[in-house]
Length: 282
Image (tube, rainbow, N blue to C red; front, side, top):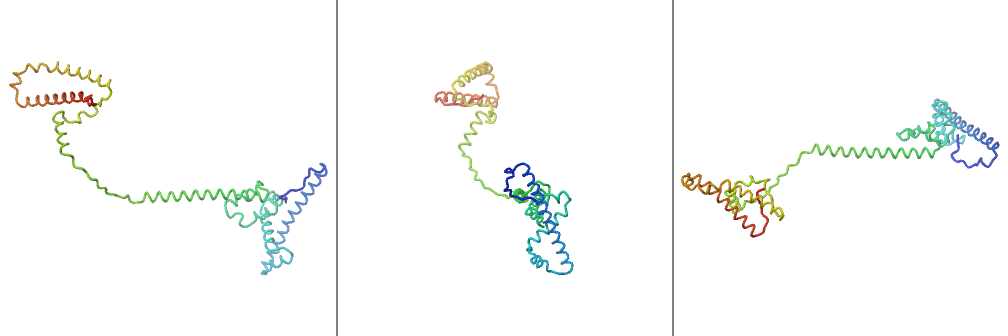
């Protein structure tokens, strides 16, 4: 058995005397440790004999010999713990502070996983004082509490996810007011279709020009395209006889195309006069 609080300074003694006193201290600690074990054995045997004979006076007998019931039970529990261990562990337990062996000898000393681990640390020789035991136990209990809290939160989250998965989808009907197109805008759109065709044919091929350099470049390109157009179709100005003999449907197609060209030219001229950005066919 060891004492948890050391107050004597062996350094104040000469080496020989210090060694002598240390030996005496160890001997007395061993005697006291074994004495506690022997006391536990005697109490255990007395308790068993009284119980076997049907007497319920063990507590009264303990009081008679000057040992209260609580201390008697601790001594018995300590004794039972020691005799169940091997010689090496039994010797280790007898050298430990009695208060620590009382603690790990309790029936509840392994009632929880943190207590079981803390007790095992004592039996392994890793913990040597009651203070160290309680600190280790508190640490392990805190870790277990944190783990259980995390598990509870995980269970709550899992339940919520399951509820969401099992819930019937909510169907909502939303009514949207659709405005009737302006007749004037529709008429204007149809007029442009007649002149220039379906606007979808220009999608992705038009560029809005706002930069001066870009406009200049486009003008040269436009001029070149017009020149090519004149070269390609200029001979039609000499086909008056052929036009006069052409069927009405053919003449009508020419008129529509010419009208579209004239409309485009007027629009370009107007845009130039107004100095506004225009959309041209890229």
